[in-house]
Length: 335
Image 1 (spheres, rainbow, N blue to C red):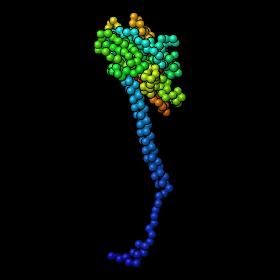
Image 2: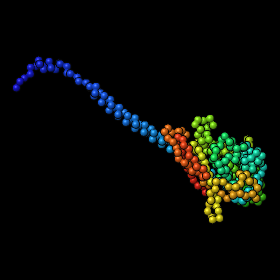
Image 3: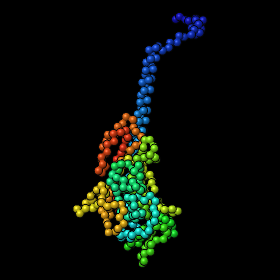
Image 4: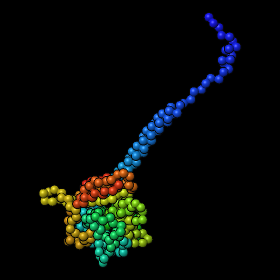
């Protein structure tokens, strides 16, 4: 067996070993594979981001639509509530000046709209009847419905808590009368007695949420609500119900002789009818069907909405880049 001399082992150990690097082809292949992996990761991230944005848009639609529908359902269930009585209301006491009252025509008597508590609901089909008063034409989205809801607060106001210049309805079992201020009308020999605050709402669609100057304009469900008086006159003020609601359609149901509930886009009769002998079909409404079309606040790139949405007597095909969701419900009136 041959042996290796120690001096040769030392020489071999001290000699530097040759280092062989990547060739150009190997580097190109490695870069190509890395770019492919990176492209795949970017695609996954982009897909996840797109899904997240889509989920956010869907959540926005569902939240706005459901909230708006629930808010209207809550008020409609209490529409027509008159406290302790269902008797024909007495003629209102002097109601005085009312700011921004929803009057249908110039010269209409102040308090005639507010005092018509016999109509728990009233509506206008694809029109704004209050352009001269509480809903300026520029604040109304064309070809949408307007709906009025009248009712009393669910609980009476103690006599010591009545507020000057606010509107109340004083009621017992067999009668009721609207009045203003802190002194209720006198009902001889009638008990129990209570005064309920009057609540009146006018729902409509506005083309914008914050201001007409916003870009893009985001439509909204808005209502005009009666605000208490206190130090001044009671007045109707605008309140935002839900942003992103683009259209509203309403049909009103009343019992027929069949007896079935027939739903109509509108009924004969004005929103002000204080004469108790001038009853209209509006006093016979027992159900309301609502359609609300919710719309996203921003356009979605690469998307075109060509869906036709059918609501009441309206059909709407947007042909734009906004996603939408249609909500509908039927509310049975309790009063």
